[in-house]
Image 1 (tube, rainbow, N blue to C red):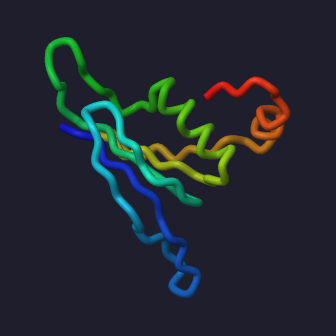
Image 2: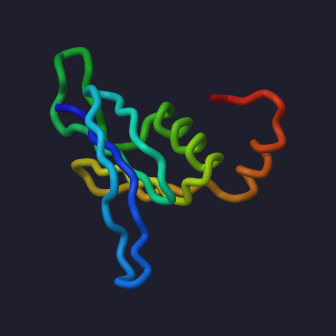
Length: 105
């Protein structure tokens, strides 16, 4: 019933991505550490009649993922009941956002 999030270490010797740090958060948020690849989970069950998470990344997720990309994250994974979403922000969009004087986050 809570989100988990974390970052990873790239192990080039064994050619694997390993977990590094993990944090736990609330039902619909987690303050996770950043990394080259970072991730968070979406709870499967509804918290109550008025709040129910779905696996699809939310608009807030996309803002957070883009913010991470602007700070060096290359890929973000969202683990949900229907599968794992693997998200990258295209380089052209990052270059455009880096030139903006007004930050969106």
